[in-house]
Amino acid sequence: ITVIRAWAFNRNSPATSSTGNFRYLSNGTLNWVEDTFVSLDRVLESARSHNVKMVLSLVDNNSQGKEDYCRWSDAIYGTSYSTNTGWNFFDDANIRLWYKEFVDKLANRRNTINGRLYSEDNTIFSIELGNELRYDKGSDPFINTLNSVNLANLGLTGGWADVMSTYIKSKFPNHLVGYGDLGHMWQYAEGDSIYNGTFYG
Image (cartoon, rainbow, N blue to C red; front, side, top):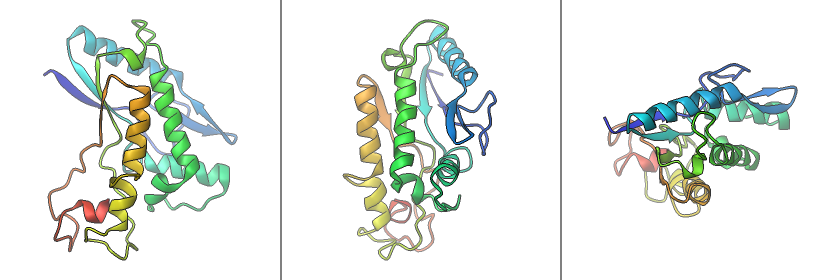
């Protein structure tokens, strides 16, 4: 084994002040959990000592990811984002800022075990935008076609993936950036006769 893909996002939702969650909400403020970052430090040092490279995935499509960001927006800004409306994660300006803040936190972190700056650590093979990320906006009038709004908003030039991967590259210039596996086969979405991405973005 030479490359391992690992989660670098909260372990439960709603996130609490406990090891395993990178960030949580308390009294209207988002806080970092240092113990979790130290755990990631240890993972990276162990990988380095075994000559293994790491792929770090920054958010999950389901409860340990997009849902946390939407809950935080509801609590802080009074939005009414259902945890099932995944497009709010991609569209909301504050949520985009929080995601970028997490990228910044990782890029600027110095490993407490070996002193390496994450943005310069070649143990990190690549940064992955997220796991199974999809737009899920069923009201798209052009769903299942190449004119899909979902596809444009998430996957095309100027879409979320383009904006965020460009941002990550500005913070991790010597690392690869990947989108992440959708985890489903072609034509998984009912009626999508072209390809799965036109439904999910």
